[in-house]
Length: 186
Picture 1 (cartoon, one colour):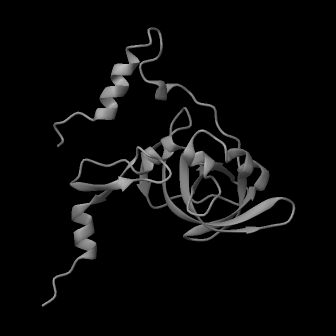
Picture 2 (cartoon, one colour):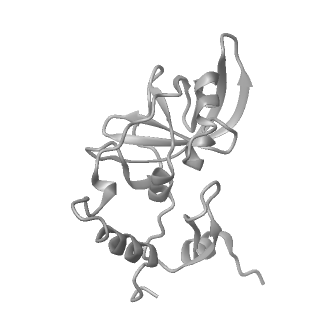
Picture 3 (tube, helix red, strand yellow):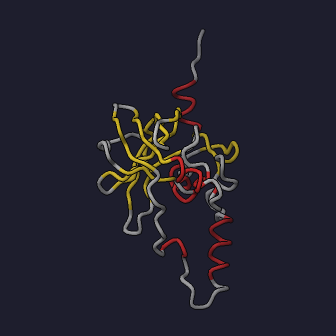
């Protein structure tokens, strides 16, 4: 399977030839950063509490990127800039606060490098640097999720797509899954 070219990559490369004068890879161009949706108020070892602006979350509900449109909902992801990295967290709980804010408890998933254009690259599980209270919280884009859920060149099976996207494949790595979640009893 590794010898077959990635169909999406092939289509992207072919479509880049149709626009004369356009950059060959649109993903290398700087993109407009979405405004912050909140800030960190509390830090713990595996998670955090964040305040999010309810009006900003409502504004993002109609965003064309489905991952951005889900920002702030239970089960969605958010990101925080820490040093030269993006820290990714999953929204676990929500509750209303006074003055138009929403308080969310989030669990840290991992971190990735922040390139010169502000994109998330080289995602890895675990956290080496934690945010401090006051750190801005941003919506996660579909492009960010591609980096988080990118299938490596290890033996894996595809089991579906990552919600809310329709093109990021969900994969299970066979060797780690069997070595951690499988036992022979006798």
